[in-house]
Structure formats: structure tokens, C-alpha cells
Length: 348
Image (cartoon, rainbow, N blue to C red; front, top):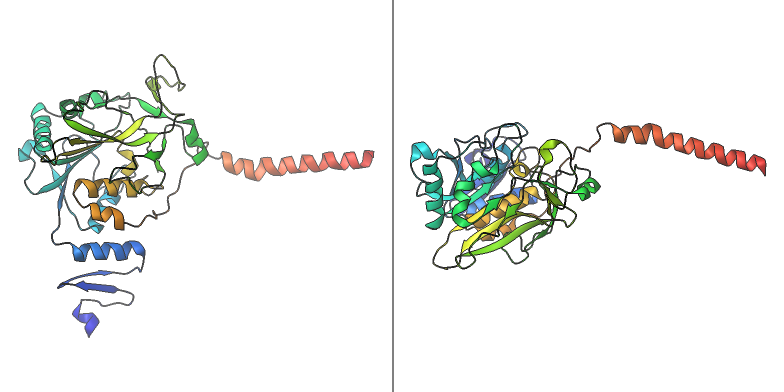
């Protein structure tokens, strides 16, 4: 009878109740328990908008490039999620706790860029995840979010970060490994996981006015990395006269020097690390959620979020190379070695 009163009609369902609110879940895991506590303890649900109209990542898509997994993760933290088209809305809504711009492929209209910049400078929070151009569509970092970032002195280089060390982790050189974080910032103060950024570009902060803004170099690549400026030609090799030597900034935070201004701008040189294909790789999900929690002013969620990410699967470069090595080459080498030893023993 008690179970039916909560609408439970099957075994294995757990009901959590607090302060007149209730939530259910069916797995007794740290993540599910944490999410239940968050949902019940929150006094209000905060609104997060994903910008649309420029070919951004689709939060309803189950495809590898989609953002449905990211949306579900945010739902689990009891955020309200919506989409926003600035051309039809005319402004960022007043109920917005955070505006996310994820992987735009088309240029912003000047009016749109002005609305976003105005929202940030008036105390808003914006999370920009922008990819380098693909060399085919003509889309580059310079003609999509640049109009927004120019107002803060931030520049995306439109390079491709290459790191040979990535091969040690079983991924390609164009998926830089990040293990260096700003230990003083709330987002990464206790973050010690490895993250991977497929086809990322570097963030140039040299033009930021440090008298007006506080700059945090949130994530950096390894010293062995570099920013490849001519990857479209098909040749990937470091050229000291053309390319930019690492470590390179992949993510940065821009805040106002004035404490009265609560503006927060976070810029990532990549949006693919949060896609359905890569979000569960190593610490990618935790880094994304920490960033969102910080921008939505939910710093307490950063400290209670489980640190163990869901298991991810990497596609090893070289296709069938690993099966070939393990099934054919290694047994062959063992056989050859045995024959050599046999002949030596006969000789003596």
C-alpha cells in the first residue's frame, strides 16, 4: 500500500523523500544517490539555455555528435533545459542562469553577438564551446563566435592541437590529452582526472585587458603538443616558424575584476569532448558538469559530485592492427625464437 501511494508498481524502485518532495531511482549507485539528494535539497530549479540557429550541437540527438547525453546529465542535476534562438527571442531571457553556445557552425549576426556580449557584461554567465574550421565548409573560429569574444580580448586561433603523447593513451594525435588544470579555480581545484579533446583549437588570451578582467587558464595541454596551423594540407609536423609550441590553453575563464559584477565567461576550444561519443571518456563528463555548476553558481555541487566517471571505450588507431599483432605476429615471433633456441641446443 505504501509503495502504491508513491506510484511504485514494481520491485527494485527506491523512493527518496525530503521536505514534502520526492524522487525515485532504481539503481543504488553513488551517482543516483547524489542526484536524488541534489533534486530534493534544491529550493528551485535553475534554467539553462542552449543557443540555436547557427548549427550548434543538438541536445536531442542520439547520434555520436549529438548532446543528448549532456542534456541527460544536466537533467540529473535537476536543471531545467531549454533552447534559445536569439533572432526570434530578441534577448537572453531573465530567468537564464546560464547560456551555452556549443559548436556553432554558422556566423552570428552582429545583433546576436551584441546581445550575448551585453548579457555577459551585465552579469550573465556564458559557456562557449567552439571548434576549429574543417577546411571544407569555410567555417572557422574567426567568423562564428569571434564577434562575441572580441569584446573581451579573447581569440580562438583556429589551429588543430596535435600531441604525440596521445598515442600512449590509445587515441590519435589530434585528440590532445589534458592533465594540467588550474588548482586554484573552483572548477578544477580538486580535479585530477585526464580529459580528452578531439580536434581542439587553442585559446589565445594575450589580448585580454587584465585591468578589467581576471583570466584563468583552466586547462592546458602537455609540453609536447603544438598548434598545427596547416593541418588542412594533410601534413602534420611541427614547424617552428609556423606552428605554436605547447603547452596550449584549451579552456579559460574570464571574470570581472570588480566584485560587484558577477559576469562569467568560459571558453573551450572544443565542443566534441561533450558529444555523445566522447562525454564518458575519462574525466570529460566531470569537467563539463563542474564548469556548468560553477557558471550556474552551484559551487556546492562540484564538491559532492562523484569523481568516478562512467567507463568509456576508445577506438585504437590503426584499425585491425592490434588483432593482427596479437593473433599472428606475436605467435610467429615466439615460434621463430623457439626454433633458434632448438638449433643452438643441437649445435652444442
